[in-house]
Image (tube, rainbow, N blue to C red; front, top):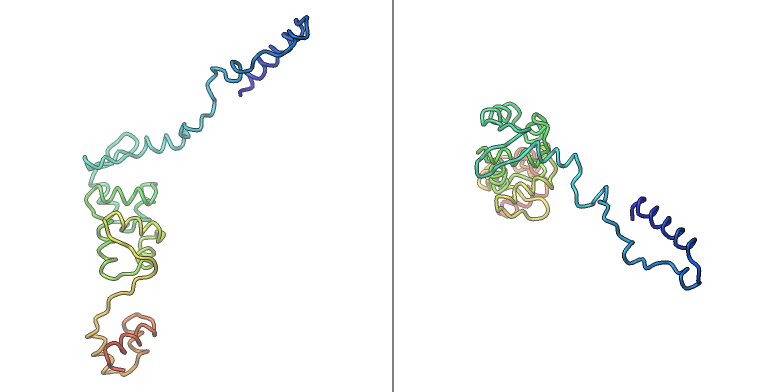
Length: 202
């Protein structure tokens, strides 16, 4: 109940008690019709904040029309391509336009750069989520969401990258050292040892 309603209710009760003569008449009136007034709530919960309204009005993507409206102006393809060519990482691209990284990914896909599909393809070929996330300057959680947009399934944990077993076998036959295989192919010692054993060279 607003302050105005409380003040009116209190004043009403005082005047009613002062004018009462009998004990029966001194009873307060029914509260059913006075608990809620027609005054509008000053801070309704369902209304978005001014910051969110300004943000929605400032940036809007029209996927079917393949355009991004920024502050009432359509951002040209040339501006988007030029910024992506200069920065080439999602974090720097988003910083260039002062937008959030998830929105930046949508902008790139809308303008035909196929950012999400490119990352998904690299992931399917065996690149690790931490490496891709560090390269783009984003969190792994956001990276997973971007990849999943393309319909690619992302399993939990780190994916084991794909190695050319023929090259590993040939190199191991020359050096006879799991440690050398680990260093040259950029893998852990346990992974190098496992591959060598699976090939049957150890």
